Amino acid sequence: MQTSRGRRRAAGPASAPRVVEVIHTERPRDLHRDARRRRGPFRQITEFASASGIGQKAGVALAATGLVLTVTVPATSPVMATDEAGIAPVAASAVTPQPAISAEAGAQIDFSRSAVVTQADPDGKLKQLLSAQSAGAVSRAASAGSLGAPLASMSTASPFGYRVSPITGGSGDFHRGQDYVAQCGTSVLAAATGTVTFVGWHQFGGGNRVVIDHGNGLETTYNHLSSFNVSEGQTVSRGDVVALSGTTGASTGCHLHFEVQVNGEVVDPTGWL
Image (cartoon, rainbow, N blue to C red; front, side):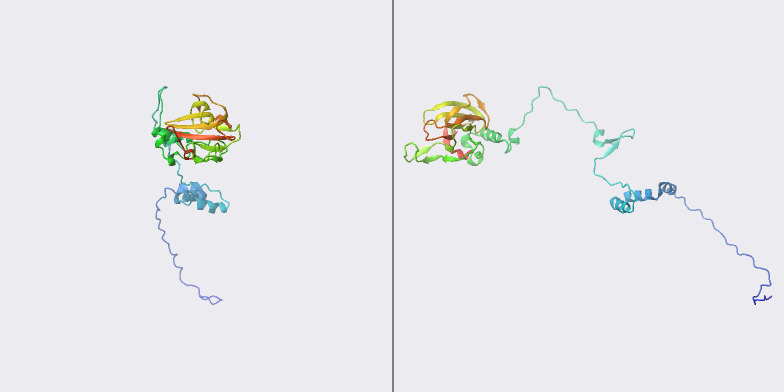
């Protein structure tokens, strides 16, 4: 039949609807799906960042979006182990018991002094030099700087060796020490640790004189003194005030005559200062 609008209507019965066959296939079960759902997306991102080693970059990127992210960064700290209860972390080194160390009450500890000698220990350097050999065998290079200055301010007035005598004016006078400028009453200092072996008047021109024995043939003398601060047999340390300068004996004015003797023979003091 044909409708008024010109469309043809089917005269026969309508065809049966097409049946779509539905195939049900069971998907394999994801064991971690439920756990991921419970953790939430942010927790998953955190775990991924920690596992992939991009902790810092991921943290910066997420922090820029206003999210707070805690990232686990590998550390180089000592390996930690938990105790048996699994409560508190315990250092791995603490798991193994350390052996106990004990010593008797009267035990003595000895060590080599030369192993701890430094520039800050000049007496240790001098002791090391003199303990190994006689002062006469010490080279100038090794002895330099081993004695301290006998005055706080050092200014040479007359050097060691031959000179014109200030007393007689004759040439060829051998000066046995080094003269340093010092006003009368200036503190005279011990050049190193030692024992005072002489305090008194020196009859050969030294006037009031102090002699200090430093061991193994090394001695220092201090001459033309105005007074003494030490006595014979006394032990002094480097820098101790042993006397006051003066102009006693064969002297033309206030100064300090300083000598260094090696095995009884005078040597140039500048080789030891």
